[in-house]
Image (cartoon, rainbow, N blue to C red; front, side):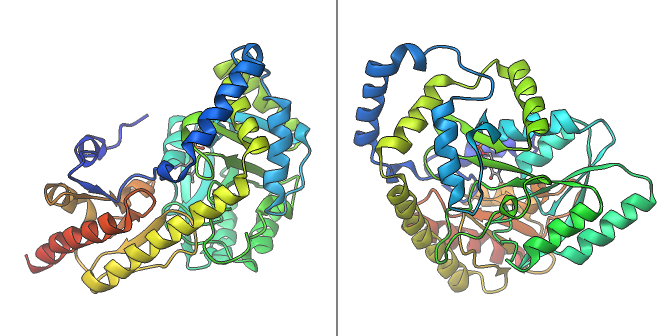
Length: 386
Ligand code: PMP
Protein backbone atom coordinates (compact mmCIF):
# COMPACT_ATOMS: atom_id res chain seq x y z
CA UNK A 1 0.00 0.00 0.00
CA UNK A 2 1.15 3.50 -0.73
CA UNK A 3 0.12 6.84 0.78
CA UNK A 4 -0.81 9.30 -1.89
CA UNK A 5 1.88 11.89 -2.42
CA UNK A 6 -0.74 14.60 -2.64
CA UNK A 7 -2.37 13.68 0.67
CA UNK A 8 -0.41 16.20 2.74
CA UNK A 9 -1.51 18.99 0.43
CA UNK A 10 -5.12 17.98 0.86
CA UNK A 11 -5.17 18.86 4.54
CA UNK A 12 -4.34 22.38 3.37
CA UNK A 13 -6.76 22.13 0.46
CA UNK A 14 -9.60 21.48 2.89
CA UNK A 15 -9.15 24.84 4.62
CA UNK A 16 -12.19 27.08 4.08
CA UNK A 17 -10.24 29.78 2.23
CA UNK A 18 -9.20 27.26 -0.44
CA UNK A 19 -11.66 26.56 -3.28
CA UNK A 20 -11.38 22.81 -3.59
CA UNK A 21 -12.02 21.46 -7.07
CA UNK A 22 -10.20 18.36 -5.86
CA UNK A 23 -12.47 16.08 -3.80
CA UNK A 24 -15.52 14.24 -5.08
CA UNK A 25 -17.81 14.99 -2.14
CA UNK A 26 -21.52 15.17 -2.95
CA UNK A 27 -23.32 18.37 -1.96
CA UNK A 28 -25.43 17.16 0.95
CA UNK A 29 -27.02 20.51 1.64
CA UNK A 30 -29.18 19.49 -1.32
CA UNK A 31 -30.82 16.83 0.92
CA UNK A 32 -34.03 17.37 2.95
CA UNK A 33 -32.27 16.82 6.29
CA UNK A 34 -35.40 17.49 8.37
CA UNK A 35 -37.34 14.74 6.58
CA UNK A 36 -34.40 12.34 6.94
CA UNK A 37 -34.05 13.14 10.65
CA UNK A 38 -37.70 12.24 11.22
CA UNK A 39 -37.36 9.00 9.24
CA UNK A 40 -34.29 7.95 11.21
CA UNK A 41 -35.99 8.66 14.51
CA UNK A 42 -38.96 6.54 13.47
CA UNK A 43 -36.62 3.76 12.34
CA UNK A 44 -34.91 3.47 15.73
CA UNK A 45 -38.24 3.78 17.56
CA UNK A 46 -39.88 0.99 15.54
CA UNK A 47 -37.02 -1.30 14.48
CA UNK A 48 -34.27 -0.32 16.91
CA UNK A 49 -33.34 -3.82 18.10
CA UNK A 50 -32.88 -5.01 14.49
CA UNK A 51 -31.11 -1.87 13.30
CA UNK A 52 -28.62 -1.99 16.16
CA UNK A 53 -28.04 -5.75 15.97
CA UNK A 54 -25.55 -7.75 13.87
CA UNK A 55 -26.94 -8.64 10.47
CA UNK A 56 -26.43 -11.11 7.64
CA UNK A 57 -23.21 -11.27 5.63
CA UNK A 58 -25.12 -10.85 2.38
CA UNK A 59 -27.05 -7.83 3.66
CA UNK A 60 -30.55 -6.92 4.79
CA UNK A 61 -33.18 -8.47 2.55
CA UNK A 62 -35.53 -5.46 2.41
CA UNK A 63 -32.64 -3.29 1.20
CA UNK A 64 -31.62 -5.87 -1.41
CA UNK A 65 -35.16 -5.76 -2.73
CA UNK A 66 -35.07 -1.99 -3.05
CA UNK A 67 -31.72 -2.22 -4.79
CA UNK A 68 -33.26 -4.35 -7.54
CA UNK A 69 -35.72 -1.50 -8.20
CA UNK A 70 -32.97 1.12 -8.33
CA UNK A 71 -30.83 -0.80 -10.82
CA UNK A 72 -33.89 -1.53 -12.98
CA UNK A 73 -33.68 2.16 -14.00
CA UNK A 74 -30.54 1.21 -15.95
CA UNK A 75 -32.02 -1.90 -17.47
CA UNK A 76 -30.54 -4.35 -14.95
CA UNK A 77 -32.90 -7.12 -14.00
CA UNK A 78 -31.79 -8.65 -10.70
CA UNK A 79 -33.25 -10.74 -7.90
CA UNK A 80 -32.57 -9.78 -4.25
CA UNK A 81 -30.63 -13.04 -4.03
CA UNK A 82 -28.11 -11.76 -6.61
CA UNK A 83 -27.21 -8.76 -4.41
CA UNK A 84 -24.47 -8.51 -1.78
CA UNK A 85 -24.53 -5.32 0.29
CA UNK A 86 -21.13 -3.79 1.04
CA UNK A 87 -19.68 -0.89 3.02
CA UNK A 88 -19.72 1.53 0.11
CA UNK A 89 -18.64 0.35 -3.32
CA UNK A 90 -15.06 0.90 -2.18
CA UNK A 91 -15.34 -2.17 0.00
CA UNK A 92 -16.96 -4.03 -2.92
CA UNK A 93 -13.83 -3.26 -4.96
CA UNK A 94 -11.67 -4.62 -2.18
CA UNK A 95 -13.70 -7.83 -1.81
CA UNK A 96 -13.86 -8.47 -5.55
CA UNK A 97 -10.10 -7.99 -5.86
CA UNK A 98 -9.47 -10.16 -2.83
CA UNK A 99 -11.38 -13.10 -4.27
CA UNK A 100 -10.02 -12.88 -7.83
CA UNK A 101 -6.50 -11.50 -7.79
CA UNK A 102 -3.27 -13.29 -6.94
CA UNK A 103 -0.01 -11.32 -6.87
CA UNK A 104 1.21 -10.70 -10.42
CA UNK A 105 -2.20 -11.16 -12.07
CA UNK A 106 -3.20 -8.51 -14.56
CA UNK A 107 -6.18 -6.23 -14.00
CA UNK A 108 -7.23 -4.08 -16.94
CA UNK A 109 -8.49 -0.57 -16.29
CA UNK A 110 -9.15 2.55 -18.29
CA UNK A 111 -6.38 5.11 -18.80
CA UNK A 112 -7.04 7.19 -16.71
CA UNK A 113 -8.92 5.30 -13.96
CA UNK A 114 -10.42 5.85 -10.49
CA UNK A 115 -7.57 6.41 -8.05
CA UNK A 116 -9.27 4.45 -5.24
CA UNK A 117 -9.56 1.35 -7.44
CA UNK A 118 -5.91 1.58 -8.51
CA UNK A 119 -4.97 1.70 -4.82
CA UNK A 120 -6.95 -1.50 -4.12
CA UNK A 121 -5.39 -3.31 -7.09
CA UNK A 122 -1.92 -2.25 -5.95
CA UNK A 123 -2.58 -3.48 -2.42
CA UNK A 124 -3.29 -6.98 -3.78
CA UNK A 125 -0.14 -6.77 -5.93
CA UNK A 126 -1.99 -6.81 -9.21
CA UNK A 127 -0.26 -5.55 -12.30
CA UNK A 128 -2.60 -2.91 -13.73
CA UNK A 129 -2.59 -2.45 -17.50
CA UNK A 130 -4.49 0.67 -18.58
CA UNK A 131 -6.34 0.80 -21.90
CA UNK A 132 -6.91 4.19 -23.60
CA UNK A 133 -10.30 5.86 -23.66
CA UNK A 134 -11.58 8.67 -25.85
CA UNK A 135 -14.69 10.86 -25.90
CA UNK A 136 -16.83 7.68 -26.33
CA UNK A 137 -15.17 5.79 -23.48
CA UNK A 138 -12.91 2.75 -23.62
CA UNK A 139 -11.63 2.12 -27.16
CA UNK A 140 -12.70 -1.42 -28.19
CA UNK A 141 -9.85 -1.95 -30.71
CA UNK A 142 -7.28 -1.02 -28.06
CA UNK A 143 -8.92 -3.39 -25.58
CA UNK A 144 -8.83 -6.25 -28.07
CA UNK A 145 -5.20 -5.56 -29.02
CA UNK A 146 -4.14 -5.35 -25.35
CA UNK A 147 -5.85 -8.64 -24.50
CA UNK A 148 -4.31 -10.34 -27.54
CA UNK A 149 -0.86 -9.05 -26.59
CA UNK A 150 -1.22 -10.15 -22.95
CA UNK A 151 -2.43 -13.62 -24.03
CA UNK A 152 0.64 -13.87 -26.31
CA UNK A 153 2.85 -13.08 -23.31
CA UNK A 154 1.10 -15.79 -21.29
CA UNK A 155 -0.23 -13.26 -18.74
CA UNK A 156 -3.30 -14.05 -16.64
CA UNK A 157 -5.88 -11.29 -16.94
CA UNK A 158 -8.45 -11.54 -14.15
CA UNK A 159 -10.89 -8.79 -15.04
CA UNK A 160 -11.53 -5.50 -16.78
CA UNK A 161 -12.36 -2.77 -14.27
CA UNK A 162 -14.45 -0.07 -15.93
CA UNK A 163 -16.50 2.96 -14.94
CA UNK A 164 -18.57 3.06 -18.13
CA UNK A 165 -20.81 6.01 -17.27
CA UNK A 166 -19.61 9.53 -16.34
CA UNK A 167 -16.18 8.14 -15.67
CA UNK A 168 -13.98 9.20 -12.77
CA UNK A 169 -11.79 11.12 -13.64
CA UNK A 170 -12.38 11.59 -17.39
CA UNK A 171 -16.12 12.43 -17.23
CA UNK A 172 -16.83 10.46 -20.44
CA UNK A 173 -19.30 7.59 -21.01
CA UNK A 174 -18.93 4.43 -23.03
CA UNK A 175 -21.23 4.96 -26.01
CA UNK A 176 -24.28 2.73 -26.54
CA UNK A 177 -22.62 1.29 -29.71
CA UNK A 178 -19.44 0.36 -27.85
CA UNK A 179 -21.12 -1.33 -24.88
CA UNK A 180 -21.87 -4.66 -26.59
CA UNK A 181 -18.50 -4.52 -28.38
CA UNK A 182 -16.57 -4.27 -25.12
CA UNK A 183 -18.57 -7.16 -23.68
CA UNK A 184 -18.02 -9.31 -26.76
CA UNK A 185 -14.25 -8.72 -26.63
CA UNK A 186 -14.07 -9.61 -22.94
CA UNK A 187 -16.20 -12.72 -23.46
CA UNK A 188 -14.01 -13.83 -26.35
CA UNK A 189 -10.87 -13.49 -24.22
CA UNK A 190 -12.49 -15.11 -21.17
CA UNK A 191 -12.18 -11.99 -19.05
CA UNK A 192 -14.74 -10.92 -16.46
CA UNK A 193 -16.02 -7.33 -16.44
CA UNK A 194 -16.25 -5.37 -13.19
CA UNK A 195 -18.65 -2.51 -13.89
CA UNK A 196 -18.36 0.27 -11.28
CA UNK A 197 -21.34 2.56 -11.68
CA UNK A 198 -21.81 5.11 -8.90
CA UNK A 199 -22.74 8.00 -11.23
CA UNK A 200 -25.04 6.31 -13.79
CA UNK A 201 -28.24 7.98 -12.54
CA UNK A 202 -26.66 11.43 -12.41
CA UNK A 203 -27.00 12.28 -16.11
CA UNK A 204 -27.88 15.90 -16.92
CA UNK A 205 -29.72 15.54 -20.20
CA UNK A 206 -30.63 12.06 -21.31
CA UNK A 207 -32.24 8.88 -20.10
CA UNK A 208 -29.77 6.63 -18.23
CA UNK A 209 -27.57 4.49 -20.49
CA UNK A 210 -28.17 0.74 -20.14
CA UNK A 211 -25.67 -0.75 -17.69
CA UNK A 212 -23.21 -3.33 -19.06
CA UNK A 213 -24.83 -5.80 -16.70
CA UNK A 214 -28.12 -5.33 -18.58
CA UNK A 215 -26.52 -7.05 -21.62
CA UNK A 216 -24.75 -9.87 -19.82
CA UNK A 217 -25.48 -11.38 -16.43
CA UNK A 218 -22.76 -14.09 -16.41
CA UNK A 219 -19.77 -12.04 -17.44
CA UNK A 220 -20.40 -8.80 -15.52
CA UNK A 221 -20.15 -7.93 -11.83
CA UNK A 222 -22.07 -4.73 -11.19
CA UNK A 223 -20.93 -2.42 -8.38
CA UNK A 224 -23.39 0.21 -7.19
CA UNK A 225 -23.51 2.79 -4.42
CA UNK A 226 -25.86 5.13 -2.62
CA UNK A 227 -23.00 7.57 -1.97
CA UNK A 228 -23.73 9.88 -4.89
CA UNK A 229 -27.49 9.43 -5.32
CA UNK A 230 -28.23 9.73 -1.58
CA UNK A 231 -25.40 10.13 0.95
CA UNK A 232 -21.93 8.61 1.41
CA UNK A 233 -22.00 8.75 5.21
CA UNK A 234 -24.10 5.61 5.51
CA UNK A 235 -21.42 3.75 3.53
CA UNK A 236 -23.86 1.54 1.65
CA UNK A 237 -22.88 0.04 -1.68
CA UNK A 238 -23.53 -3.30 -3.33
CA UNK A 239 -22.47 -5.92 -5.85
CA UNK A 240 -24.77 -7.81 -8.22
CA UNK A 241 -23.05 -11.04 -9.15
CA UNK A 242 -23.57 -14.55 -10.49
CA UNK A 243 -24.29 -16.86 -7.54
CA UNK A 244 -20.92 -18.63 -7.53
CA UNK A 245 -19.19 -15.25 -7.18
CA UNK A 246 -21.83 -13.99 -4.76
CA UNK A 247 -21.09 -16.89 -2.39
CA UNK A 248 -17.36 -16.05 -2.34
CA UNK A 249 -18.13 -12.36 -1.84
CA UNK A 250 -20.30 -13.15 1.18
CA UNK A 251 -17.51 -15.27 2.69
CA UNK A 252 -14.95 -12.53 2.02
CA UNK A 253 -17.27 -9.90 3.50
CA UNK A 254 -17.94 -12.00 6.61
CA UNK A 255 -14.22 -12.38 7.08
CA UNK A 256 -13.68 -8.63 6.72
CA UNK A 257 -16.62 -7.15 8.66
CA UNK A 258 -18.94 -10.02 9.81
CA UNK A 259 -21.86 -8.07 8.39
CA UNK A 260 -22.29 -4.62 6.88
CA UNK A 261 -23.91 -2.11 9.27
CA UNK A 262 -27.55 -3.00 9.86
CA UNK A 263 -28.26 0.53 11.05
CA UNK A 264 -27.00 1.99 7.78
CA UNK A 265 -28.76 -0.57 5.63
CA UNK A 266 -32.10 -0.06 7.36
CA UNK A 267 -31.62 3.69 7.17
CA UNK A 268 -31.14 3.50 3.40
CA UNK A 269 -34.02 1.01 3.02
CA UNK A 270 -36.30 3.30 5.04
CA UNK A 271 -35.22 6.29 2.97
CA UNK A 272 -36.02 4.42 -0.26
CA UNK A 273 -39.36 3.28 1.14
CA UNK A 274 -40.61 6.54 2.59
CA UNK A 275 -38.90 9.37 0.71
CA UNK A 276 -39.23 10.38 -2.92
CA UNK A 277 -35.72 9.20 -3.87
CA UNK A 278 -36.31 9.68 -7.58
CA UNK A 279 -37.17 13.34 -6.98
CA UNK A 280 -33.99 13.65 -4.89
CA UNK A 281 -31.89 12.26 -7.74
CA UNK A 282 -33.55 14.72 -10.09
CA UNK A 283 -32.75 17.58 -7.69
CA UNK A 284 -29.11 16.46 -7.52
CA UNK A 285 -28.94 16.31 -11.32
CA UNK A 286 -30.19 19.87 -11.64
CA UNK A 287 -27.81 21.11 -8.96
CA UNK A 288 -24.81 19.42 -10.55
CA UNK A 289 -25.76 20.48 -14.08
CA UNK A 290 -25.69 24.11 -12.98
CA UNK A 291 -22.24 23.56 -11.43
CA UNK A 292 -20.95 21.79 -14.53
CA UNK A 293 -22.10 24.79 -16.57
CA UNK A 294 -20.35 27.16 -14.15
CA UNK A 295 -17.09 25.23 -14.38
CA UNK A 296 -17.09 24.79 -18.14
CA UNK A 297 -18.13 28.42 -18.64
CA UNK A 298 -15.34 29.68 -16.38
CA UNK A 299 -12.76 27.47 -18.10
CA UNK A 300 -13.79 28.90 -21.48
CA UNK A 301 -13.43 32.40 -20.16
CA UNK A 302 -10.18 32.09 -18.18
CA UNK A 303 -8.22 29.11 -19.53
CA UNK A 304 -8.48 29.25 -23.31
CA UNK A 305 -5.07 27.56 -23.69
CA UNK A 306 -6.30 24.36 -22.02
CA UNK A 307 -8.75 21.79 -23.42
CA UNK A 308 -11.43 19.73 -21.69
CA UNK A 309 -14.49 17.56 -22.20
CA UNK A 310 -18.01 18.71 -21.33
CA UNK A 311 -19.40 15.88 -19.18
CA UNK A 312 -23.08 14.96 -19.59
CA UNK A 313 -23.31 13.78 -15.99
CA UNK A 314 -21.35 12.86 -12.88
CA UNK A 315 -18.87 15.07 -11.02
CA UNK A 316 -15.72 15.61 -13.09
CA UNK A 317 -14.06 17.58 -15.86
CA UNK A 318 -10.72 16.30 -17.17
CA UNK A 319 -8.54 19.18 -18.27
CA UNK A 320 -5.48 18.99 -20.51
CA UNK A 321 -3.04 21.76 -19.65
CA UNK A 322 -1.28 23.93 -22.20
CA UNK A 323 1.83 22.27 -23.65
CA UNK A 324 4.75 21.86 -21.28
CA UNK A 325 2.88 22.40 -17.96
CA UNK A 326 3.06 19.84 -15.15
CA UNK A 327 -0.06 19.61 -12.97
CA UNK A 328 1.73 17.85 -10.14
CA UNK A 329 4.60 20.32 -9.95
CA UNK A 330 2.11 23.20 -10.10
CA UNK A 331 -0.13 22.00 -7.25
CA UNK A 332 1.76 23.63 -4.32
CA UNK A 333 1.57 26.98 -6.14
CA UNK A 334 -2.13 26.47 -6.80
CA UNK A 335 -2.77 25.73 -3.13
CA UNK A 336 -0.86 28.90 -2.21
CA UNK A 337 -3.21 30.71 -4.61
CA UNK A 338 -6.09 29.05 -2.65
CA UNK A 339 -7.36 26.59 -5.23
CA UNK A 340 -6.93 22.79 -5.31
CA UNK A 341 -7.33 20.06 -7.92
CA UNK A 342 -6.11 16.49 -8.40
CA UNK A 343 -3.14 16.14 -10.76
CA UNK A 344 -3.66 13.61 -13.56
CA UNK A 345 -0.79 11.44 -12.29
CA UNK A 346 -3.07 10.11 -9.52
CA UNK A 347 -5.15 8.25 -12.11
CA UNK A 348 -2.37 6.23 -13.71
CA UNK A 349 -0.61 3.14 -12.43
CA UNK A 350 2.60 4.34 -14.05
CA UNK A 351 3.94 7.88 -14.11
CA UNK A 352 1.76 9.32 -16.89
CA UNK A 353 -0.85 12.05 -16.51
CA UNK A 354 1.15 15.14 -15.48
CA UNK A 355 -0.33 17.06 -18.43
CA UNK A 356 -3.88 16.68 -17.02
CA UNK A 357 -5.84 17.66 -13.95
CA UNK A 358 -9.21 16.53 -12.62
CA UNK A 359 -11.59 19.29 -11.59
CA UNK A 360 -14.71 18.37 -9.59
CA UNK A 361 -17.76 20.56 -9.72
CA UNK A 362 -19.92 18.69 -7.19
CA UNK A 363 -19.21 20.48 -3.92
CA UNK A 364 -18.45 24.20 -4.36
CA UNK A 365 -21.27 26.58 -5.28
CA UNK A 366 -21.24 28.01 -8.86
CA UNK A 367 -19.90 31.27 -7.43
CA UNK A 368 -17.00 29.51 -5.70
CA UNK A 369 -16.32 27.41 -8.80
CA UNK A 370 -15.91 30.58 -10.90
CA UNK A 371 -13.63 32.07 -8.24
CA UNK A 372 -11.61 28.83 -8.13
CA UNK A 373 -11.11 28.83 -11.91
CA UNK A 374 -10.05 32.51 -11.82
CA UNK A 375 -7.41 31.60 -9.22
CA UNK A 376 -6.36 28.53 -11.19
CA UNK A 377 -6.01 30.57 -14.37
CA UNK A 378 -3.70 32.99 -12.52
CA UNK A 379 -1.42 30.06 -11.64
CA UNK A 380 -1.58 28.35 -15.06
CA UNK A 381 -1.03 31.56 -17.00
CA UNK A 382 1.82 32.53 -14.65
CA UNK A 383 3.48 29.12 -15.20
CA UNK A 384 3.06 29.37 -18.95
CA UNK A 385 5.00 32.62 -18.92
CA UNK A 386 7.93 31.20 -16.90
N1 PMP B 1 -15.97 4.04 -7.59
C1 PMP B 1 -15.85 5.25 -8.11
C2 PMP B 1 -15.68 5.40 -9.58
C3 PMP B 1 -15.89 6.38 -7.29
O1 PMP B 1 -15.77 7.60 -7.84
C4 PMP B 1 -16.06 6.21 -5.89
C5 PMP B 1 -16.09 7.37 -4.93
N2 PMP B 1 -15.37 8.46 -5.25
C6 PMP B 1 -16.18 4.91 -5.40
C7 PMP B 1 -16.14 3.85 -6.27
C8 PMP B 1 -16.36 4.62 -3.94
O2 PMP B 1 -17.59 5.08 -3.48
P1 PMP B 1 -18.31 4.58 -2.18
O3 PMP B 1 -17.38 3.67 -1.44
O4 PMP B 1 -18.62 5.80 -1.40
O5 PMP B 1 -19.53 3.86 -2.64
